[in-house]
Image (cartoon, rainbow, N blue to C red; front, side):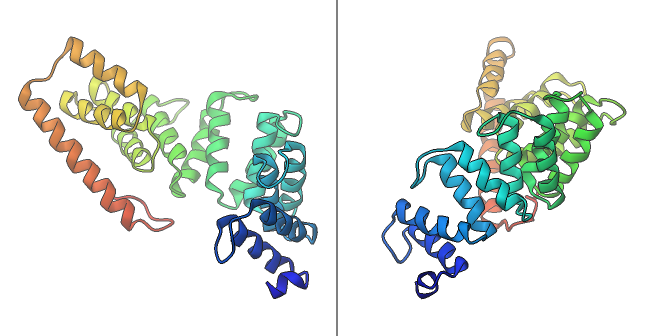
Length: 275
């Protein structure tokens, strides 16, 4: 605490983190906010970003999205990629700042250029859904590709969708769609389970496989996906599985969940889950 007492912004920042986590000192959000504010006032970018989060969440301070945007901007102007992403999100939502998609894209792009994975996914979504801009599948594809290289689950799912649909010159490819949906699912994107199951259910891009489809829908239900639940209901109603097929589904579900548990334990930042 000596450095913090002398006004060292890095020391103040780390002391704030200790209070926030209750490490070596009692957990105290008010004290965390106090030292975070001091470090931020001294120009420490990490503290400015975190102070923005505190104001946004009302953590140790009154909730104030305008102040959050102010501190995110200060950190973003110093090149902090998390702050650039957060400021882009506030502009997209119109939270603490006027809604402005161009400003959102501006800050998301700055963050994405520094390999901030959530920003790449956000840009992909903007162009895929035409959120305040003209739909541009190739631009979405570009950002999703970058996000996929950073193992971002939303980007992986987005790539799967574009390969499934084959839009604007993007080659339709069922095998690649399945690959990216699976990686997205393993990274925690729940809707990817139903997307993957549907590939095997309709038999348009992949060979129809009711057991494989039922397996992925079951995994989706286990993760709380309502779309997967709907598909299971439809299959049970119209194309019920035999007892041997249900046993095979149970085996595949157990094997997959065991595989995912082991691989996620071994995973390090930047690594891809093995399929």
